[in-house]
Length: 182
Image (cartoon, rainbow, N blue to C red; front, side, top):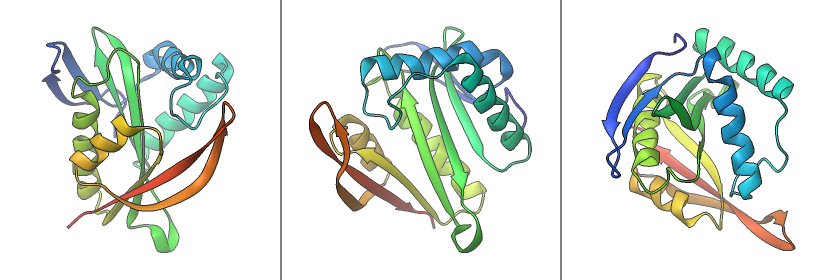
């Protein structure tokens, strides 16, 4: 898929206009700010250290190349010209090529507005278009808000790794969730 392709637009619960589209090079600074703001917030994400500009350039170049070759579906949410969320759907290979793995992050101040739900619905639709049969994702067991969104679009808990993460002196389970596509 081409960089910068608009997939859909909608109005969030807080009345802000949201554009869901594939990323483009011009998003580099917004994406770097997004991930680093989540690290600063100590959000329930799997990244613990800030990304450098060089790391983000390398990452975005790989994402855009994979997107152009249809190896991955990547989606950002833009509000007022700024990227406030990013997500991806990665088809697996070999015996698992019918499975897609989802990742999603949303900037503080843009949660609870329906953006995550719309992103997840879009990823599910895209997974079906890609011919995938199973979608899966992982979440911190403490991330009740995200787990609620995943359940709302039809994901169910299919596994749990106790004490998978250790943060701030506490162990946190990793919840594995799955949605079967028909």
